[in-house]
Amino acid sequence: MATEIERKFLVSDDGWKRAAVRAARIRDGLVAMDNGRHARVRILDGSATIALKGPLEGMGRYEYEYEIPLADAEEMLLTMCDGRVLEKRRHYVPHGGLTWEVDVYDGILDGVVIAEVELDRADREVPLPDWVGREVTGDARFSKHRMLDERRRALAT
Image (cartoon, rainbow, N blue to C red; front, side, top):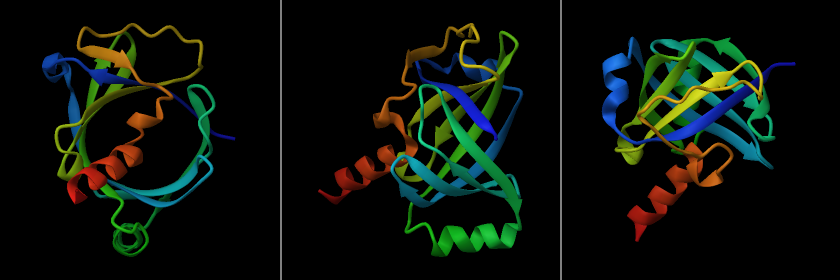
């Protein structure tokens, strides 16, 4: 069983940009969601995956991710996500023996910047970079699809 353990933070300034070692373009679509479980399709720099994720329990959740054909992923984004597709640029930033992922959103979430770090165990000590702000791990308001829904509602009024 695969477990994803991550911590999520707001970003306080652009200091991470100096340390970024690479970046990737991501399109991420929500296929289905129920009781904290969800299925998503993702295209990351020309390769595609589908992932099934369990409900968040603390910092971790069960996650199963599989490669799929790029053409299938493109079609799923168009036909199965009901417009719930996010675009972002992910920047990889090493710090304190870990690789931070700083996601800079485009499109409907333009201006949102979130930093995440994946861990091998929940009790691992995480040295925080100076550019990291408030921790939002487990705060549903900062789930990407909740932010998408709120932004859509704001634009509709």
